[in-house]
Amino acid sequence: MADEQGGLTGRPVRWGILATGGIARSFVTDVAKLPDAEIVAVGSRTAESAERFATAHGIPRAHGSWAALAEDPEVDVVYVATPHSAHAEPVRLCLEAGTPVLCEKPFTLNAAQATELVALARERGVFLMEAMWTYCSPVVRRMVEVIAEGAIGEVRSVHVDFGFVAPTDPAHRLRDPELGGGALLDLGVYPVSFAQLVLGEPSEVRAWAAMSGGTDENTGLLLGYESGAVAALTCSFVADTARTAVVTGSRGRIEVPRGFLHPESFVLHRAGADAPEEFTAPGPAMSYAHEAAEVGRALRAGELESPLVPLDGTLAVMRTLDAARREIGLRYPGE
Image 1 (cartoon, rainbow, N blue to C red):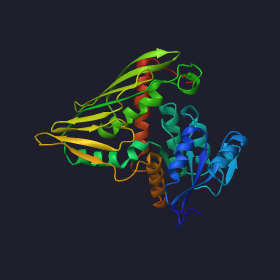
Image 2 (image 1 turned 120 degrees about the horizontal axis):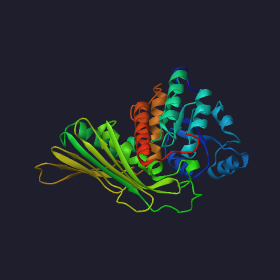
Image 3 (image 1 turned 90 degrees about the vertical axis):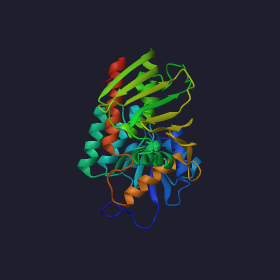
Image 4 (image 1 turned 90 degrees about the horizontal axis):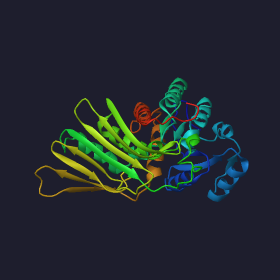
């Protein structure tokens, strides 16, 4: 059992999985690689779905409701893997039950929902973290250190793109306004989060989008900063983009190759240097495992927030996404 400070005694962190889709399967596969974590329960809106998932992954307990999982006394932390349009309700259930939460990105549908959940977590004294695996990547963490050390001087610009050709069926979750569809929330959260990891929250947000069926499918953002720095970001459901990131400073630049959201390397170009320097991941790619390991570390330390993925940073990203949606005229049903 967790002790009164929220830390854990000498045993694995016991995870509960809320939802049974593809991202939940990927998370379970990666967490199985951690020596100090185990999946002990799964919860879904139906008992049948939970039982199928439990059987497929060797999970001992299956719950036929989100509330039952949230209240399971043998679960130390719940991973919320629903579509983002359905993040708020299960996260609230867990926090009200006093159960720590790792919630998939984008954190919520809008900044108002995110603000409510963060306030509830802080009021109840319950751990809460967005599952922004990019921030937990060893490569990205080293990149942040290199920038802080002044290797490229003062950051002047960030360029990031993320796009692929998505299904065109208007009923698909990526296209359905009822499910928070659109490239901005599903894909744009990664470029925005990357830019704000480096530059912080912008003072100005500009955006343009090609719309289809009530959601955005090809979107560009320009973030402006009082320092004079800019971030140029794109996300797309109609083009397979390079999926790279470049951070340019007054004395050099950092290039992150395809797959910037969970990279295996980056290249540092110092002004005047004879050759670039490449930094590579210290081990095999375990994208979900890195974020799960950070949750375990924080829980064992009795922390209520992760310094790698701070809640104030999550709220800042949601505010930027809200501002971009206002620019492109994207409003979801019920807002």
